[in-house]
Length: 216
Length: 216
Image (cartoon, rainbow over all chains, first blue to last red):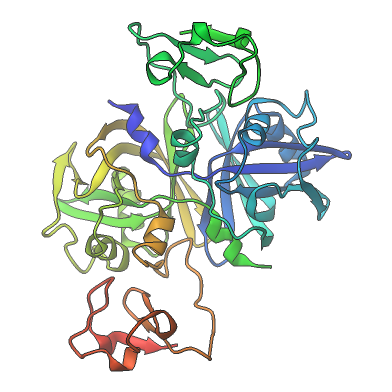
């Protein structure tokens, strides 16, 4: 059994947002797909531990912003590795209130707005079936795929993502993982060994300091 | 409302197969996503009118082959635009019997085998939740995305696909659509107008003759 075979499934890069009592809430997802063409129903998957999951069950309405290949790591890691319960993810982010939802428009090629018609409990996650009520294009740019994010931006899956995989053990090479975002610094692939990096060095993905890295 | 915004969602290119009474059955899908990471559950969407949908409800077991960018149009259109009820799609296709399933291995980077744990009725389609029982890599090549298929191979969605969209009317330019596979020949984008193509010309996607094309 080679679970890494599942990494060959294709995904996009999305930010799902909603609003409760004037508070903007949202998180990063890579799982979204259209289920029917005539009635325009899409399905997204959200971890049950996710704050956005809990809130979306209340508000029953959300926006899904589709990120382009120009989307910055800071945006992805802010929405992917932190909780809306703890920080205001929308600070310094280009978004607009559309249909009373905070729709992220920063490096976004299109957005979709819809109502939750059903929540399906699947083990650790819920599938939200969303009936599309409006949709619009924003920038004429290519949508980012999850593969692009992994290979070009060297991103990793948050632990709560459906596509998360436990890091493989490899004791021969020194590898260091960011405890905040999961980014892996692999000495064998870099010019400077991790230990020799200056103290001012920060995680290229989420921006935290060297001290937040753990040797694998 | 611009439904074409939904085209910016990212998908892969897959062939789902099963076997009933020694008969190999399968079809092309672009909707597959991992729902949970710990228990490895994936979701696929299949049109209710699809023969493979009916059979999969009986067999409750299937293989999903992930196509690479090298996959040929003939393979995609055979599995996408015809029915296993009418033709043997597996003839002249590289496949192997694995766990009593006909697993397509032609231009495939990985395959996943699993059991149907639940079928969710969503309007015209069903979501099949599949618990992965085995998975393997085949070729070290890049998985094909649906966008690549559209833009590089100029493919189109079959009418039964969740991503199918009605062709837009455009009376200024002569456009001809293949009635079998939906391929559009657009005079404004081609060197030779459709009417001037030789009678021996065939659809680049599904291979049928010029007479199967309808002027839009």
